[in-house]
Image 1: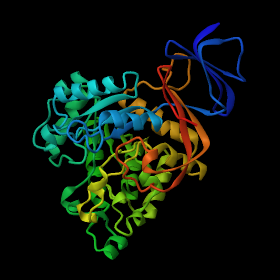
Image 2 (image 1 turned 135 degrees about the horizontal axis):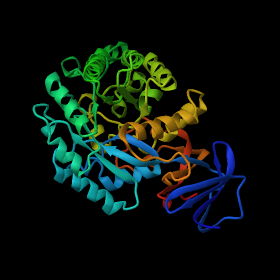
Image 3 (image 1 turned 135 degrees about the vertical axis):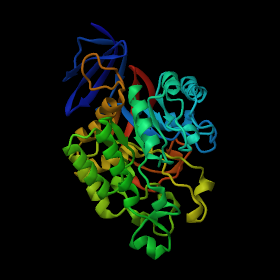
Image 4 (image 1 turned 90 degrees about the vertical axis):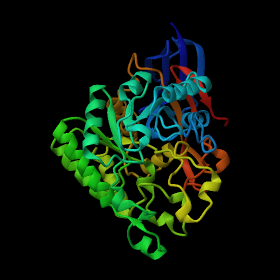
Length: 425
C-alpha cells in the first residue's frame, strides 16, 4: 500500500508507531510501526509525541488598524509555532469588525499569507462599533464568515439589547461570547482589589465586577434556554456560579486562560506592566479554584486571550499601560508545565484546547480516528526553552513569562496532512 504521507517513529497516547495520512485525512495509526505501507512523503518523528492541532477561541490579531502591535501574518505564525491550527479572532480592530468588508479582509489576509493554515475564524462585533448601543448586522457578518459574536472588552450593559443579541445569534446558529464585567465597579481599576493593590496604591478591580455579570448571563441563558459562552473567567466566585448553573443544566460554557492558572496578583509587584491584564490576575486562592474547575470540567475551554502590544506601550507607568498578555507562543508550554506538576493531565489539555472548542463552536477537529482531518503536531516533552523576545513569533513580547524556562515545544506542525511548520533543531 502507498499512502500520501507516513509519519514514522511517533508516540500517540503512550504507544509508539506510525501515522498514515490519505488525502488530508487520518487513515490509521499503526502501533509499533509498519513497513507494509510506504508514503509518497515520509517524515521521521524522532520519537516525539503526536498531538492534535489546538484551537484557540479567543485571540486579538490587531489587523486591520493596529498592525504595529501584530498583524494577521505574524499572529498566525505565532499560532502555528505554538500548536494552534485554528484561531478565533476578536472584533476590536480599527475599523471594528462589524461589517462584511472587514470580515472578508481578515479572511483574505489569512489566505494570502497562510493558504494552508493555520485557519482564521473571525468573531463579529455584537454591536456596531462595539459601542453597546445597537446590534451589528449579525446576519451579514455570519454570511461573510464570522463564527461567533462578542463585544469583547466592552461588555453590553443594556440587558434588553444583550437579550436580543443572544436570540439573534442563536437564530443564526452561532454563539455569543461575553466578557463579564460590570464597568461601574471596575472603572479606573488597574489590578485585583486586595492587599497588594492597597500596598501599591493602585485602584483595584473587585471580583464582584466579574461575577455579577456571570450571574446575569447565567440567568439570561436559563430564561432563554439559549447557550452563552463566558470569556476568560478569573475568580473563585465566578467558578462557583458556573458550577451551580451546570448542576441546573443551564446552557452555559466557560473558558479561562493559562495566565489565570499559573500566575497570581503577586506578579504585579514592582509595578510590572507585563502582568497587567483584564480581568486582572487574582489571588492564589482564585488560581487554585480555577485549577480545580478545569479538572472537574466546570471550565470547558482554555483560550489564550492573546493580546499583543508594542514594547513602548508597556514601557510606561503602570496606570498608563494597556491591558493584555501575548499568549500564543507560550500557552502550550505553560499548560504542559501544569501537567508536569500534576495539576491536570494530557487528556485534560486535549479536551480543553481541542474537543470542547470544536464542539462548542462547530469547528472540525482531529481525534486521530479514521477520516478525521489530518491536523496535528509533533511535541517534544523534554525540550526546554527560555522565553526570550527573539524566541517568540508574535510581534507582541509582552508576557510575564519573559526570562522563564519552560518545558515542551512544537517541533513540526501538519495541517490537512501538509507540513506547515518545522522548528530547526
